[in-house]
Length: 160
Image (cartoon, rainbow, N blue to C red; front, side, top):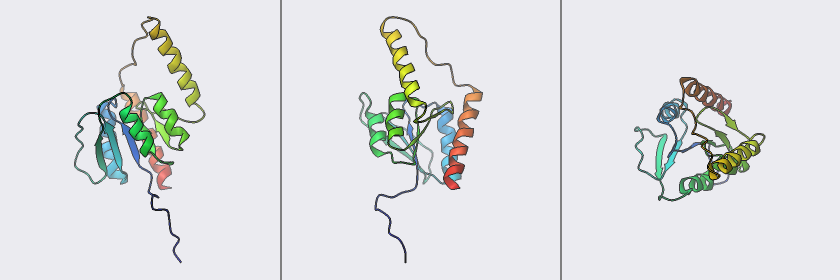
């Protein structure tokens, strides 16, 4: 006898907060989608072009504050992977049971997300008071490699 599964049951997929995702990270994801046969959806408020593939999708949302983030949060399911550097979005999807990987290869988890939110809020407070905090460092070759390794580990756990 076969066991029925819920209509909304689906294999894990990858969601990308694409407005700020660096091009080299997108390229890594494009190659991984076909290699691992996993659906990757890039969500942005601008028109995105993705290479032709059964596994790659672009979802354009209206312009507006956090519209892409809200769309990802609404669609993500437990077991999915979200690629984002947006800490509040990461916190929201981690609560839903999804995993988060930032473009530098760091996993954001239940264990470390509160610390990241606190640091983000602290830095925002400094900026709001007029302190020049500078932006993040440019994405390095080591960052790209760390992202690729972390993605490969997630894909391997998914298969096995």
